[in-house]
Amino acid sequence: MFASFIVHLRPLEISPLGRTLGRSLHGLLLRLISQNDPHLANALHSDISPKPFTVSMLRGRLVRHHGSLCATPEELYRVRYTVLTDETFNALGHVLLGKLVEQAPVEIDGKPFALEAISADPEQSQGWARVATEQALLAEASPADRVTLRFASATTFRTGDMNLLFPLPTSVFGSLTRKWEAFCATALPAQIDEFIAGQIAAERYELATQVVPYGGHQFNGFVGDCQFRLLHKDPVYCRVVNALAEFALFAGVGQKTTQGLGQARRVEGWGGGSQPVHPRGGPGYGAERFRYGEVEDAVEAEGALGVGGVAVGD
Image (cartoon, rainbow, N blue to C red; front, side, top):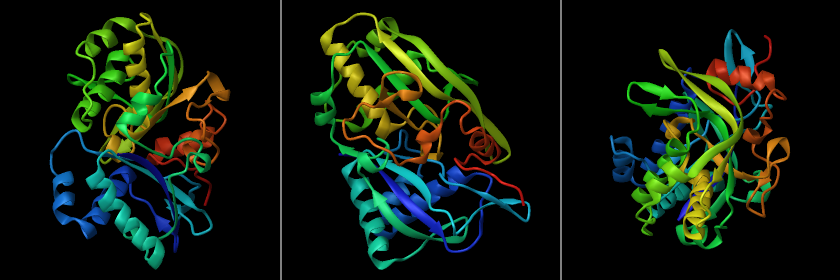
């Protein structure tokens, strides 16, 4: 089973945030899982790759306090977790639901946050939350010959000693194919790699570069929309590519999807009016506010900290 859910958090005090918040939220997930299944948490913390989960950046308005960007009790924040295996879903879900019922706080960078809600409903998350199975994704996949993906956080692909800052079809769908093969029982067609390499083209895009600090260095990535065209309209391969596009919601795309990068999902249509393909999509998740300059301050804050929020003056 695949699950994507939004966790709503409110700090109990002014909470300075670390320079690598994606890593902090990654650590929070592992600590939560460890409370239910320490063996699984240790396995997920190991060098296994790919990993059966993704983690978003923190979404919500930030304030500057004594020179540091901080979360404030007046604001409700959001983090999106996705899981690709039943084992991970059961361990994380058990602890999160328990803390929600018990009103027990969680800690981010040493500061307590109240867990106020958990949502897996597409209608309450602008299409960013959903529960599905690989069988459902394949059964619901259309043979459409155009697919648009929205990259809502910095996305990059490792190529040799370089990071690639463009959604080449082989990079995007190759990333999704590798995760599908790692976590799904249903085999993809034998020639899927050849189809991706020779029959998918990036037809149009609106992309921007985004810089995410990471400890002592930084990641440059791209955000925005890219529409892909399937040149050969073979219905079998078209349905598979469409299923992989839906899978992006759960799997993420590219590097460091477990620490905030590569948050992506399929949308329908093109440009600012694009809507989730899933019919139950609706408003709610902060990442969807990105509209190429409409929230310029928020993008600047992400560049400063890797966080989807707005930095304001002291």
